[in-house]
Length: 406
View: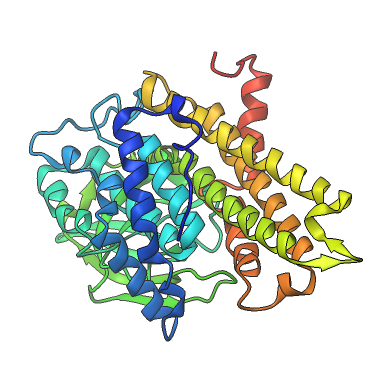
């Protein structure tokens, strides 16, 4: 499969190591092209995870440099980016990988990203022993999940009701988590819980929970797009004191810093999906004729293609600006990240919708690439902060008089 990444025509955002990575990612893309031919959903998920491990991509989301003994713990009040304080997340590399995976295999992209979400709280604030345990996740021998969302607590993280009651053996967990990605593959999950809901953020904590413990039940869910996802039921699950990540009361900061570390890359995955839709549409309209001429020669079709090209380039530039700033500045760039996530996912949705329109009836038939992308792009406008949440973040910043990159 021949693809192009943003390193091809936007090299000004990248270093030489990124350009080399881009070439390697293009070469690895073909390994993901046949995953959707597997016999069933679980088999396809396993094949995607195996391909990611073989390609060594998990090292981009579980960086080995951050797992060394004595690596500094997080200052939860710090505004410095993860890369600049030594945690090893290279945002531009992460975005390049997700651009490629979004193009060839959205299923693998989801598993890849959530491996990062599920381990990053430990990268940020884990003990040496906890960090050492992540080496098997770097190699892809184990898979992690990020158990934050609950039936009544989505964007409102402070409303978490899963209880972590201190006991003689550590903590006893009771509660339910919903829409947890990677859950049907995962060995461990970072579970966010509260000592007592009345404490608000002060009672929130993060725990590293093996999913084979007594009292853990996993209920697979079926999403519209291919996605390893499920519900997590915790009933009297006991974990030792060593399962605590960071300190009690740091749960909210760990969750937010983790989401902030990966949010811009959601836009990169959207770029990959939009680029694939654009390529598929261009091939189709160049080959198909209606009313005596090829579709690509017809003005209305050209207008659709022009709008798609503008949206795709705008999405790429927003994502790469945010990724570049995140890698190079000493302060958080929450507004720019939200702009990139919002702008890229909404633009990609429009590009893919136009591609389906250009395909006509073929565009909504099961098995069509653009139909698959139409389903795959939709969750990106929801997870890691809905489009409405991103608008709220941007609007609040502007109301406070904070300009872009100010």
